[in-house]
Image (cartoon, rainbow, N blue to C red; front, side):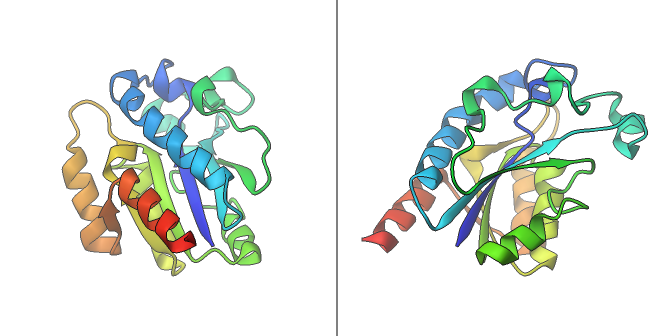
Length: 186
């Protein structure tokens, strides 16, 4: 089983306090396509890994208040909103990585997940830490380059190369992931 992990596609990272709409808007159609595909399959999970901070969280000292639990800023952007579909999980997080104190690994073990496709923002931060969490737990990692982005001034390609070199992530694109999955099912 495969899990699509959608990292921090939230209002505060789109048009809110840490807005990144210029870059994030380019990956939204890619992520939407992957979500539609994953929802149509019984061998995929869809996981929304979302910042949901409290005032005392360590990140707040670095980034300032953002994606505070229970606020609109912590909601997934309208274009990618969870719909409560079967095998769809919303996993709030208080740290950079999707696996840090969230129980996600136990859920993946229950479903028999062996591989993850990580998309969202930001490649150099939360996507990186999520990939690390997957790596140390033995999951195969795929990163579609057209499904991740960074803030202005950060080298997305260098961040992607780090994931390949250090975590052994397969660097690909969304079309290749979809084509491989469709041909596997045929």
